[in-house]
Amino acid sequence: MENHDSDGSGIDLAPMLDFVLNLLIFFIITAVFVKEIGITVSRPTSAAAEKKEGGSIIINIRASGEIYVGNRLVDLRAVRANIERLHAQKPEDAVVVLAEKEAPTGSLVQVIDQVRQGGVQNVSIAASAAAAGG
Image (cartoon, rainbow, N blue to C red; front, side, top):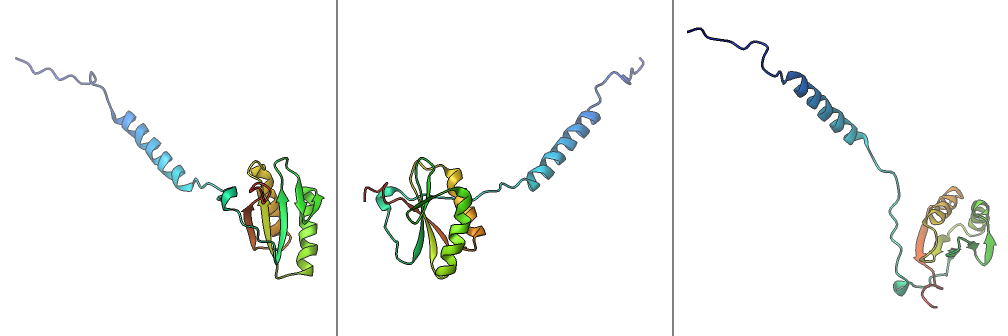
């Protein structure tokens, strides 16, 4: 009896294993370099809101997106100039951003960015006193 060798009739798994190994290496490398950019903001509930206006520059963001620095309605582009002016008058004051619950988060982030560009690094976020019913 002759021994029949089946040369070439089997399935070669080497190319498939090479391909899977390359995919694995690709996903491991890309997963290491992916980093999310953003800031974590936790808005306080209006029941926990406290009114702290002494020694602070107050910025109100309404649900409609209107921005008030002090009691004046300002455009987003004017926030930086107003903060620079107020910070020059009272450099020890911090900035408190009072955002209503329905206020656009994008506006909140842009206002904080404008305040920091205006030279103030001490920025706090609080619930709006109007939202607390006070």
